[in-house]
Length: 364
Ligand code: MN
Image (cartoon, rainbow, N blue to C red; front, side, top):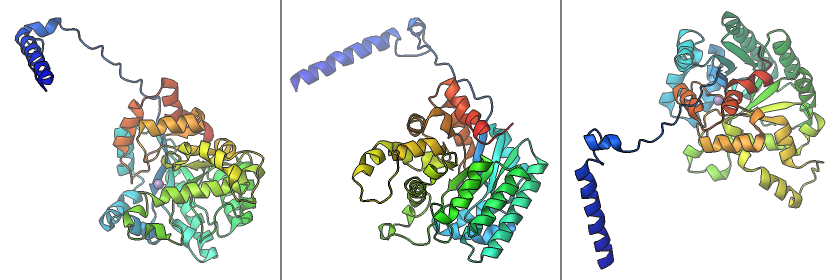
């Protein structure tokens, strides 16, 4: 106790002496001679910024979008519809004021994926794609497009993807999770994956609500939706693709996961380790991480965290991580300001901000 008090008195005396000399008072004469910290140079900004989980809505799809009302505050839902509906001044102003050069647009989910009538789903998906193509044609240097697909009919979905890529010049497709309870690892989708691989375009696997709700979410509405259940749902969907051998059968098929890989980057080692003792009839020649790294690309949408980005880059490779915002559900200013200053090398920053997207989406 006494020694602590002595130490306190000594340090107080030193502080007082320093204050007296002006060392602790910036702006007075004595402060000028104090060593100044070396200023840290600002990171070199990326040459371009491309974002690819950027959403819109059309009047015919607002009722489907209402299915997501359960996941967010109802007041927010009503505010977001007019923002999603705009393809002009408002959207471009947010892009321009934040320096987003190019946005690949996709219909806000779940869209026709919850439509029980297959014929209606096929017709509406085509309508959504035609309408998006019209908007892209008005601003071809600013917007690209992901196809909306009626996966109720795998053959029609494959044909529509081909039409969207070859005729409408879209960059791939965005799928909102399972379709009426069927996941994309079902063998009925082999025809779809075959076409995805042949067209050499990615399928963005975006979250959606499954038809059933696990007991683990009971009494916790906050866990149902973007806070947690969407990550569980979407990374589980990706693992179904891996374990069912979709990527063994279609090794060049590409899938994009948003939200920094929906927790997968941190799981690779454990997946490879524990598959050896799992009680499964699915046997694959390679460990899970082989297929995840070979076939899955990631975006940073909705995760502005240096440590999460470092993990994603290290786990999946610098060439497989792409910047995205998730407009308008995430704040463009926050996301862009973050990627401009994130703890990356100049080469990594350019790869994430636009280079990888340019290569993977075949953007000129
Ligand atoms: Mn999204």
